[in-house]
Amino acid sequence: MPPKAITFNKEQIVQVENRAPYLTREQLADFFGIHVNTFDAIRERQPEVEVAYKKARAETIGKIAESLVMDALDGDTTSRIFFLKTQAGWRETNVIDHQSSDGSMKPNLIEFVAPQIEKDDKGDD
Image (cartoon, rainbow, N blue to C red; front, side, top):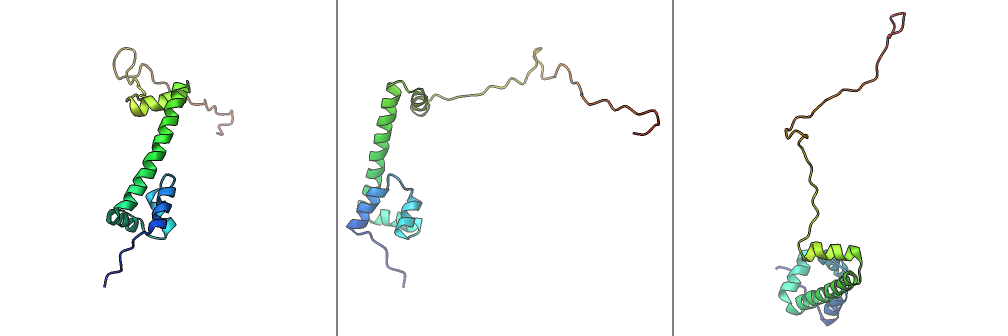
C-alpha cells in the first residue's frame, strides 16, 4: 500500500507564508523534513499552500522592487544601472578588435624575446 499523502495543516501553511520570502523550495522542504518533490506535490494538492507560497514571495519581491526604484529615482547609480539592465534591456558588451591596423588579421610583427646565453671561455655552459 502506498504511503499516505502528506497534507499541511493551517499552522504549517502559515509557516510556509512566513518563510517563503526567504527560503527556496528546497530549504522549505528541509524545514518541514520532507523532500522537495513532496513539498511540490503538497503545493499541487493543496491550493491554499500554493497561494500562501506565491503570495508571500510576490509581496516581498514587490517591496524590494519598490525600494530599488526609489533608490534609483533618488540618484543611486548602482540601482539605476541594475534597474535599466533588468527592466529596460540595457546590457554591457565588450568588443575585442581582432584585426591589425591594416585591416588584416595578420600581426604586424612577431618578436621573440629570450635572454642571451653566453658561453664562458672554457667552453662550459
